[in-house]
Length: 323
Image 1 (cartoon, rainbow, N blue to C red):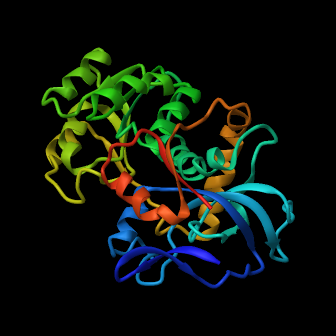
Image 2: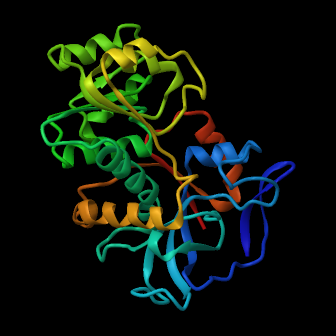
Image 3: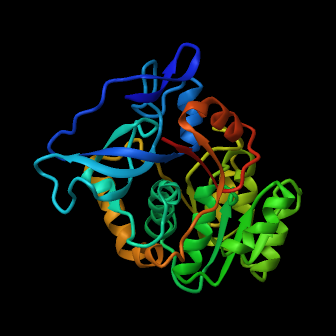
């Protein structure tokens, strides 16, 4: 089969062995796959948890038809149209644990649209609802809101009853579009006083929940923008892996600062994350209420160009590969 493989010369499309499902896995004939920031980390040669290194097939989310199922898999059969999270999705065939596979709603959802959803849905449901403990009537700020995962965070916060949803982007054109996906207020974090805008919007109280995909470069202003007893959920580190942190302000406001990642979670934990996500969100997925825009589509043969497009950070929404 053809697959996007990490080589000493970068990511190249090469022949690779077709994977074989074990008892709890589903083999998928991939039709479309989406890009995520973690793919850039792996493509750069760094490890991302246990993933990475020469010979790695990239790709964390994908959609296609079930080709085969392991003996422990129930509710799925060859021919089913599915969306999945897993690894090795930038290939003609890929594997996913049964708990990370969902049937594509029986409507007009394309494989390209379906491939944009798994990582964003499970990441942001876990960040907003489970780790972030959002309650109806609270206020939410999504840092890095113009990414696919960020746009999903805005929508989930609104769907789950947030009173005020704010999103940040450093690009004016992207900020203008955040309202389409649930943002009541768009914030420019290149402005030194951006935290003041959050405080003003919350009548001086500060925001109840911050879901942070940026981290280092905004960490201390997040503390200033947060409410007493607020929660900050660290999802990503687009602004740097390390930075200054005002420990006194953190303590003064008694903020819960919560780190999340899928890299250290067990198979059982990830299955539970997906189960909880589907319980809360799947009706909204089926009706099209939760959706993500596709910024640009590339064929698998142009995977290097797709990675360059993401690296340029000029996209709004998801970048998709067709297989």
